[in-house]
Image (cartoon, rainbow, N blue to C red; front, side, top):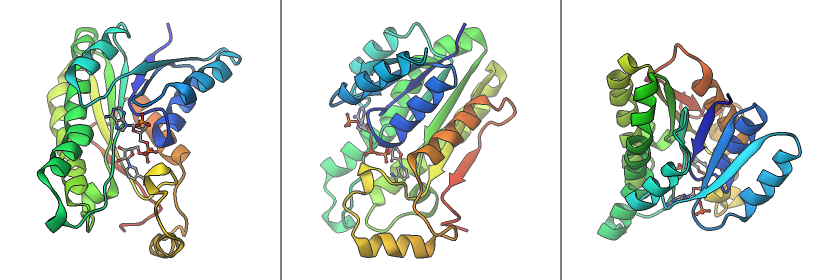
Amino acid sequence: MRETVLITGASRGIGYATAELFAVNGYTVYANYRSSPKSLELLSEKLSERGCTLIPLYADVSNSNDVEHMVSQTNGVDILINNAGIAQFKQFVDMSETDWDNMMSVNLKSVYLCTHCVIPHMIKRKHGAIVNISSVWGVTGGSCEVHYSAAKAGVIGFTKALAKEMAPSGIRVNCIAPGVIETDMNKELSDYDRQLIKEQTPLGTIGLPDHIAQAALFLAENQFITGEILNVNGGFHI
Ligand code: NAP
């Protein structure tokens, strides 16, 4: 039997790269999208020619009904990657309550909703792994991203607490804190910003989605790591 993995926010960027990597490594992948299934349908066709399985599933992961419906289509999963997220660059004084609530719903509440929905099956089988995608800003704090940083710091606390609680049930819970990665989330960065980030990164480059995908696969598979926050950022915050 192939192991199964549910990856949220898999239509683009880090989630897409992670879905592809798990599929070519022999997992049956449930790849969540919100806006459009197009990219995942194409990926699914490409992968099936190689004997790999990827099934696109719709859900707005901040909506409990959507999440329940999505998970009900999986028959239970062995691994959950909580990756879906949004970013917003805004000064704190201009941040509205709606901005705050939206950020918390998509970046933190979704982690609760998806995990809460998949975990009974994992507990029953005494087997499972959860990988949450936080951010370097959740560790260090990012100026003009207070709500994003707070939500991502919440993901780190969530990871550590749940890792302790679930270890006796054979479930590992880990987290990745990516640095700046080349995805749509950073498409507004100016050339000047990009240069500055590279100069502040000891490895001198912006990361690629596959760097995070590889870290997710490692954390999902290593059986003796739990409660860990893995910084994948080219040395950005040394
Ligand atoms: P991205 O390219 O903007 O992709 C975001 C993904 O999340 C998309 O697939 C999007 O789906 C999905 N998504 C957003 N809201 C959703 C919702 N309510 N329900 C379901 N899916 C939703 O971003 P990315 O850079 O790959 O980011 C992935 C994760 O890494 C995020 O949690 C982000 O905070 C984190 N991260 C990224 C960076 C970076 O530099 N890129 C750094 C640190 C952490 P739709 O296309 O359907 O909207």
